[in-house]
Image (tube, rainbow, N blue to C red; front, side, top):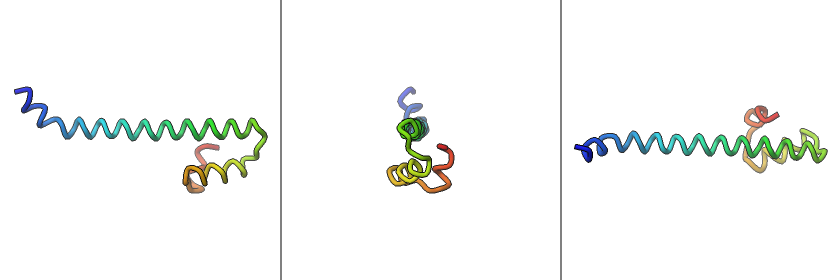
Length: 69
């Protein structure tokens, strides 16, 4: 009975697991970028310089980088 239930639920469980991993990766990237922005500002770099470097390093567009500033 348990095996049959696990067989039915396994695809859904895998999907939830992968979704959680992806959310974790996104959150980690967001935290890393925010930390880099703060650090570079602390070192005296302009937002324009920071924006250029972050966009290049993380392959972000102008629309995506806005949420970090």
